[in-house]
Image (cartoon, rainbow, N blue to C red):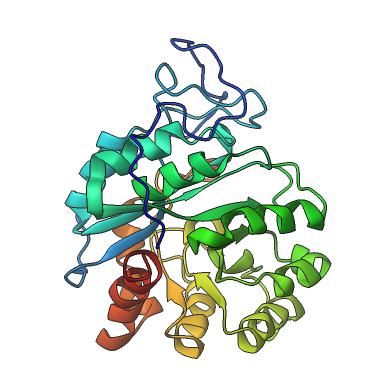
Length: 317
């Protein structure tokens, strides 16, 4: 564990620093998170962790990145914390979103406000300093995210990511990877060479209209089955499902299959505030109520929601 006693700077891990007090208009047609989601029927186990959520802005305090590919509605930390308490989660893992680029100030601010109730996943660039990394570690960052989804980011050559891995090695951070199902084969050499724990967002975005033994999902299962350092987030029902809410029935078999095959390497999150949704804005009560269908036993539910995220984000600290 890295010890560091610096006071966190307000500009932690920034490439460019846009002027403060800039007004940002969200993209036309941007779907806004629900102000009043319903209370889920499913009672979360004590100590449950929402292991994938975001903060956006507010843009007049934490400006959105000039290179962003979308401009969201503000989703500040107080709204995120209120949702945590309403749904019954004890802790959260806040993941840096591409609209903030490598300016992690909003993330660090939320982590400092949450204290031990949150951990973070940052975005970094090769120019990040060791001091900036140490400050983020002190705030609660425990991983970095590599985004390969072309509509959200501009993926780089493999050696770019290998260089970033070297920068974080001393901190013991893991790597979160976000990609489309078809990208796994293309980037497999990179992914299998990464020396640390790898967490795959949204199960690698499988096509849930295909069978469980379809080629893309078979490759993903092989990826997890042959690499004990690979974990999966069983999130993204609202993104992947074609059958839609409230039950997202076509998504469930895929998530359940991974939960049962790899019970010690799965986590779950709400993905609040659900950026870039086009079809509908999900109700978090509906999403939480999917959990006993994804993880049918109490033992699986506890692993998914408590034991696994605690081991990855808190106990390894």
